[in-house]
Length: 295
Image (cartoon, rainbow, N blue to C red; front, top):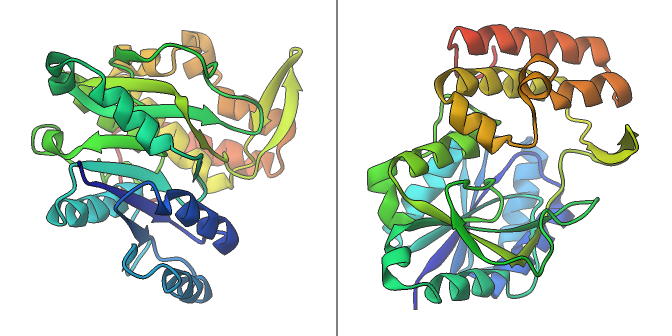
C-alpha cells in the first residue's frame, strides 16, 4: 500500500474549520503535517491544543515568521519525504475532503496502464465551492497537462527530485500554477478525477451577478491583490502560453488588461482604492521581476 501524507499550510485559521479538515482526512491518509505560517500567538496555542486531539496523526511545524506558502509547503514536503511518503497531498486550512476522496483518486491512478502511471505526476480532484462543482461529477477521468490548485492535489514524491520543490519567491498566489508548469516541462501528466470531491472556500466568499452570470466574490484583504497582480504578470511574461491555458476561460483582454479579480473588487468589494493601489503596485513589481514578501 502506498503511503500518503497530507501537508497543510495554515495562517490564522478558523480552528473549528481546521478541525473539520483534519477529521475529513483522518481515515484517508497515513498522517498529516500542518505547517503554520506564523499565526497569532493565541491561534498557535489553539492549533497545538487541536493537534493533541489527534495523537500519532498530526505533526506540527511552526514558522518563526510569516514566510509564504512556498516555504511552508517545502518544509512539510521535506518532512513527508523523510517519513517515506509515496504521495504528498497538498492542502490548506479550509479545504474539506468528502468521504473516500483519496481512495477514489488512488483507485483511478491504479486503474491506468503501467506506461501512463509512469508519466502521471499529479492527481487532482473535483472542486466544489459555494456555487457549484468545477466538473459534472460523472465526467470522464482524464490525463492532461493542466495541473491543479494546491488544495487537494496529490504529488508523486518521485517527481520532486526532477521537478523541484515549490517556488518560495512567489510567497502566495499562483504557487500551484508555477509548480504545475514545471511538472509539464518535465513531461509529467495530471490525472483529473471528477468523482473525487473536495469542498473549498475562496476567501470570505459571497455570490454576485455579472452579466446575468453568478460569480463568486472572494472579499480578499488588500494585500492579496498585490500578490495576485504581481505573480500573474510575472508568470504571464515567463510562461505566456502555459499561463493563458491555465486561465483558459479568460481572453487576452479579460485576463491581462482587465483582470477578473479586479473587476470583482471594483464592483462588489470594500476598500476599492486600496485594492486598486495594491494591484497596481503588484503589476509594476511583477513586470520587473521583484519577488518575495511585500515590505
